[in-house]
Image (cartoon, rainbow, N blue to C red; front, side, top):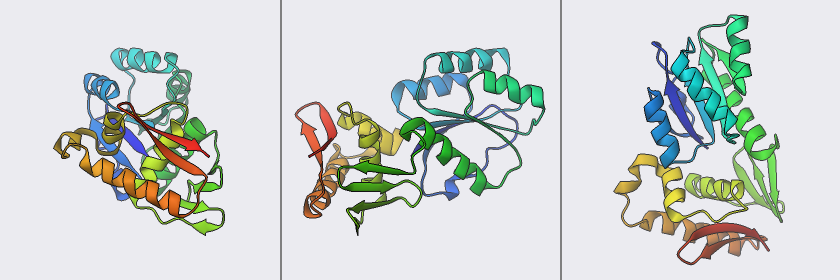
Length: 222
């Protein structure tokens, strides 16, 4: 799961890095956020904001009107009802008043992402493969399939985009963000894909990661 953390407030963002479930990028301006959205894909946008200024209002309204499928969550020390209502009118999926325990923030982010990306399902079924979003585990029938964190993220991201081919560039950027330029000719990505394919094959799963020549990867049900 990948987040874009945007801090429009004078207060610091909560330290969400305690969760190993999240990849994330952090920015502090609308321009930086817009640039990130042009370059990378995200599952959820988390904004730390105490007052909606005209510039941020216009940007958020445009975000909602574009019918993007990323989750949108506000974190704020402002708990006034009228402020919450104006945020929900902008299309915010959840509004969290700070301070709040990190564990609850993380749970709410996961809940919004499930609702936006996976129609609120806690388990995903692909043929005989079951992905448990809560436990971050994968089973083939009733047998556990042991995946690394990166292999799990690849499998889940390809499923979320199952109706299209995902290029190696977009997949690598989703996994590693700005650090993708430091990878050696995508060799690390190819190694993860190879290992994931081998595990799916050896477990007799009904799922295959198809390599579309010179285009990218797509998950298919056999």
